Image 1 (spheres, rainbow, N blue to C red):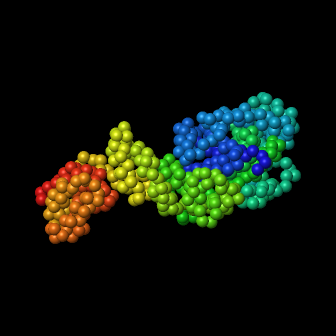
Image 2: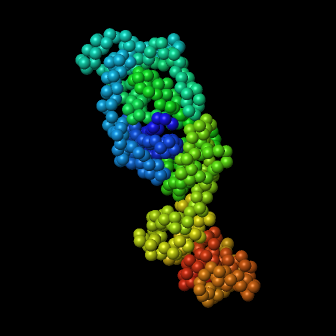
Image 3: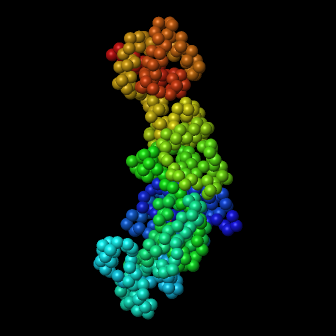
Amino acid sequence: MTQDVRVRFAPSPTGHLHIGGARTAIYNWAFARHHGGAFVLRIDDTDPERSTTENTQAILRALRWLGLDWDEGPEVGGDFGPYFQTQRSESYADALEHLGSNGHAYPCFCTPEELDAMREVARTRGGFSGYDRTCRDIPVEDARSRVDAGESHVWRVKVPADRGDIVIEDAVRGRVSWPADVMDDFILVRTDGTPTYNFATVVDDWKMGITHIIRGDDHLSNTPRQIVVYEALEAPQPVFAHMSLIFGADGKRLSKRHGATSVEAYRDEGYLPEALLNYLSLLGWSIDDKTTLFDRETLVREFHIERISKNPGVWDPDKLDWMNGVYIREMSAEQLLERVTPLLEDAGLISAGEADERRDWLLEMVSLVSERIKRLDEVVPKVGFLFRSSVEIEESARVKVLEKEGAEAALAKAKDVLAGVEPFESGAIEDALRAIPERINVKPKLVFQSVRVAVTGSMVSPPLFESLALLGKDEAVRRIGSAIALTSG
Ligand code: GLU
């Protein structure tokens, strides 16, 4: 690419970072990194009622969590700032001034009532329903003096009368065209002086030197208006790439009904940023027809806009879980422990600082569960029994296992033999327990199940022998003793 690539992600801070927005950010970031260009983050905070600093912070946090760094924008600055639309009024005023003087925009004094009446006429007549251009032909001098006198007005773009169809060569969708004759002289600047989305966006993208606009196709319908603004400003047009939105398996646009929609909710549910990045990248883009697992460097190296699909990405929670499980299994125990430590601390299973003191033990603990989980939030419920000072035996486990005939004898024997296992390691523990069934004539399953319930409180647990080893001899024997007391009591 001859020109330096500059792309932007421009979220409106009216909510947290949505996974659809995250995908847009990923594509822009990967495209910029692939071409050695700039990834700009701009905050489109023009909606004063719904934009909050808190949301902006949450968006920045989520982007960082995903590992998406920006070259220009909030907290990092840059030569094209400010990077908040609310701080760019001067830029919009300059652009409007330019359009006013070159005749591409005009003030419109029509009142809301007049506009309503106009729409009503259009509705009954049928046909063109946009603004009827009443103010377009007010002589410039008259318009100017009415503005100077403080008469309430908006500014509208003057769509050229001879403008033919509006055509773009979209990098994803190919040629897209719109007939110009249905385009009305839409508003650029409102009565209160604030710019509309289509005006602010174009002014910013132009002033920020944006070369490619990669965004969801929910914005495709805005594009012809934006083209008209580029032309009015005599600004070079960027390349547009509109990608399909993400849909649920039911064919409806992804929404809360399909599960969590914010990136941070996925973080809290125990998804890894690497896995979510990998998964989201594939919702509408691919390296080839077979590669599913790849790291960040591969994404950057392979990111070609031509590989963005025209078809909608379909959200598949099972695939995401599967992928997350793969990423978890690929991690070393050290890496996994690093991710899991805050969760153990939050759950009160360890105190701050304990992670270092008990590092070896904790590494064994995470290795025990890493093969069996798809999400990090599964760890705490699975290993809680290893940390607590006593187990609460689930009622169903008590009835189904501990009350079985022979269970008490099996536990008594297990307590006995385990007390003699030295060193208390999983192999030796296994040998000792496996010898029991023959000696007291019970089924092996009964021995293992009753010991499992006695020490974990539940019929499902991480592997038994390793769990016992992690618990330590004294604690294991003590718990079995309590279970015996429960059964005989
Ligand atoms: N702030 C707009 C949004 O969040 C940006 C749209 C665009 O990319 O032009 O939808």
